[in-house]
Length: 424
Image (cartoon, helix red, strand yellow):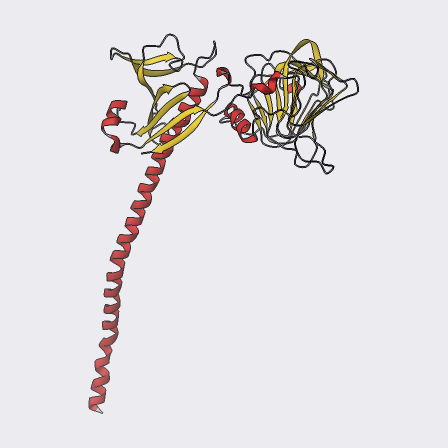
């Protein structure tokens, strides 16, 4: 019994041994586990920092794209901005206020690239400042390089070229992304399929005459995606209007304007005028001038409705209570029903274009411009569909204005986009 007691008494240290073994095993596992976790945290931090650097550099690319689209001197139009450049003698000019070379006639002796800085007290973008260089390569092609750097650092294009590994840069090639669709505007009516002229409807010129109505048009026709991109450049940075109604009496001028959804435009007071000062961009069903009388001054601008009708007949309807003034474009992806009054003393060229639907016009007054429809869905009868329907109105074709806000290939309407993009 004494031996058994002593044997059992000796077991009392086993628990401590097991505990020590477990602690040792935990130490062996915990140290590399903590090291692994620390490595993961460091990697995540590095990833976040690199992402922020890329975002900062990308902001410079987008800023340069805006300047290429808006700071070229086209005719007498174009924004000015501050930039630096060297002339052919190597003389550096800093903080020059001008238009984007080579469009500025006062700044022709330029050795590319021009460059400028986007700076802030604690970093302009995600804690970083950005240097952007723009080089004119050939007709309608620019090379843009955007480089992020710490706010306390001073850099130049030469310094970045000599120390590329110290910075995050993005290189982009920018060029025009739209074709020439001016052929659509060269006819009183331009129709992808058949034209229907009924009642007292008439055109001048007549069908078969130069610039008269043209069925089964085979020229270049814009896609939804192209026009979406073309007009979206006009509303960059805008928030969607937060109501589905506009009271003309509250908006004597409007534009640029963005509405993501349906929209109704009416007036609480008869005789009010709403004047467009830039593009009106709407993504839903649009009703204008259905219940109250007012004036709509296009003022050379565009109403663009990115909506196909969603099964209904028309995406955009303009009623007889709306009197249209001036020149401009009225464009929808889906069908358009136009029944407006036309001001006989202040009329202009109006391009009404349904990209993939029926364009129906029943004006009250003489309409001047082009009516174009792209509906081309096969009919159950096997007959060709009608793309344009002119009812009881007079349509006169006039020479389109050179500043018509529509992709016509004219330099004033050229929009630039990114062709390719490299991160380094």
